[in-house]
Length: 381
Image 1 (cartoon, rainbow, N blue to C red):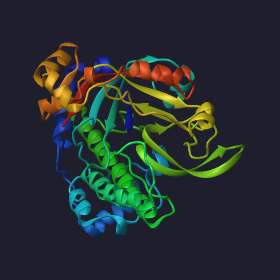
Image 2 (cartoon, rainbow, N blue to C red; image 1 turned 60 degrees about the vertical axis):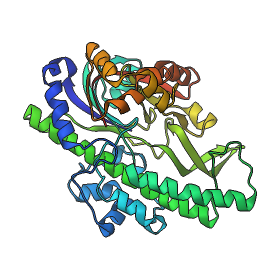
Image 3 (tube, rainbow, N blue to C red; image 1 turned 90 degrees about the vertical axis):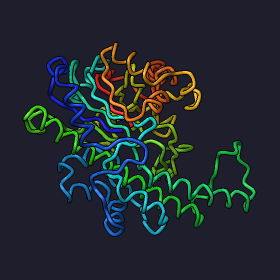
């Protein structure tokens, strides 16, 4: 997840939202199997996997300050391209800077409500502000790494007799050869995902510049934060009264470090890490802030999103993509979708109410509400 701020007021740009969306869609490829404007051969792709956003910075796709506001500074250590299959390399070579499909999106949003003025001031968020949220990951490369290692994990489970509560789960001891190989490959996917979102953010900035004929700097298009979900990381946490190094798996969860943590950008350290929680395209997304309670209770973690109520196939059976598009546009939400059938899979009715999910996190104090963001324009594959 990534959120770009601007100093623009949403009400002042409503007449240009359609032009802005079309310019972004022209620059940022979307859809299943989409290919980007960047094509990297194996040697260069290995640098993407190891260096993360440092690669993007060297190649002109990042501002110097961007890495400060990315989890792990945009580069997860431990990546080893030697643990990645040739098929994964092939799938990843032409997808940097692509949105993909499914629940991935690029949204133009308005800050609709502020809940915590102190935190909002630190995050430089204000009511009526125009912002851009990007949700995408490691694309076909990460998907292939997952597919490859599911087979490896299945073999480990059978060989060791590990009992799992669900057939869809797989695992290996983290210090085993298989466990180390998977972590090294996963880190490659994480760094690729950082680059993917960074390149898209670069092209979003360029799109704003073309539409408004101003520099991205003058429009205040700074990165609030970029935070992962669905990854595992080695971190230090209090366990049984002492600090221990543990491997934290955040599946359907996101990091929410509280005040004072050394890995939180210095600008936010006194208040806590920004947390980005995407909603469905018809309601809202949220900015939260991490807490001390999250550090004590949930290994510095909170929800990533709302979670599904319907499977994708059920949503397609029950919901018309064209009708959904018309319904959203009647609410003033512009929609650019490459595939209306896939749009139906992500209908608001297919998901839990994100506001209720966020309220639970807020009331249990594992992340506190800072701002609610409403969608103005939605770009999906």
